[in-house]
Length: 89
Image (cartoon, rainbow, N blue to C red; front, side):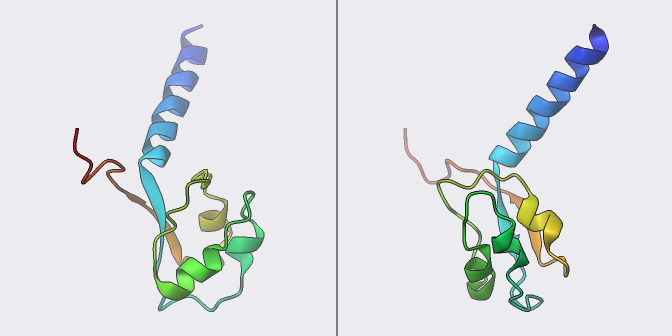
């Protein structure tokens, strides 16, 4: 039973890390092949973000990592961010 609980804890930790991050492109390396956008399950135009050199800040982004994993040139990476920075309580 302990092994199963360990898996859930590991998955929860991974989810927390992904939820507090965003996909960031290196626009100088991008050749605009569109593989990242094609593999996005939500249909986000990741290629356009890479073209502009802007992080993928999209309310529907799942941070599933498909775009990062499928990029043949390693243009995309996850970067940890504070989602609530600048927000006052």
